[in-house]
Length: 365
Image (cartoon, rainbow, N blue to C red):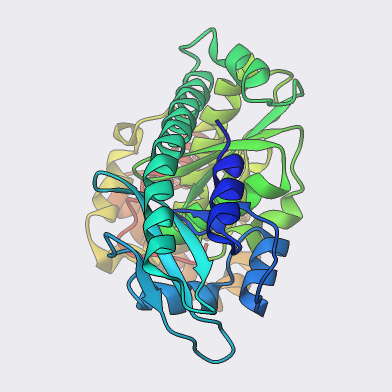
């Protein structure tokens, strides 16, 4: 049952306009306006929610703590009001608002209170239905992403209205407030669904997403983007890729803040390689912060295909100092940089160490 008939009936019985909000102060229903009106009432009706500054004013007046009708005096152009909390036992479900100009007689306040009790059951049924729908949707999204629920895709398309389009998955890591806020904004902008897990957020998008828009959605966060998949039933693959890309973006600054699976290069090859595969000599260097200059020199040298000229320039290091460091690396790791197999092992071990967060201190590379 929709609350509008009860709101209209109460307005008719007490002879003044009535407005009903939910617990988040979004407008659910309102009667015909036939009495005094201020900008607050007008804006609430037009925008379907109360402005932030006005919400703060009313919350300060104690509407969330009230267990019965609360009179709020006029203030700064805001007309006086009676607020009747709509509660089912201790659960706050909404607010009935009546402009208290002229002051309402006690009989009218009593009628509004009785109506609030009836509305509580209506709003409770709607809230429980919405919660069940949300839980079913979240379960479907989780099942689709993990690939363990063959009916999840059907639920999202048929019950949740998810477009039957190719899908792309994004994984976000960062401050929880930034992450959750960005996910909600993204859901408004793109046909998508989201989940928040213990250490990351997930955005399941219909179609492709413009990567240029992602940094603004998630400031102070890193994002991994999986390759698109042709259908929801294959979203688990994109999720696995996005998860790995997000870890790379977090641990290898040069790859972020937005890292796509397609652009990961060698880090894509190392997605399922354990840190145990790191060369013992490199592992020994990683065990002490004093070896960081050697590690970064070696990595730069190998990244630049063993060019001493380019490495010296990149590190602003004299050639003699470069050769000394490289000889130290060979001595400490028991390898030879003239041996192609040794060079490959060292290079992959350095990348694997970065991927697993094993470097003693952060680096810009």
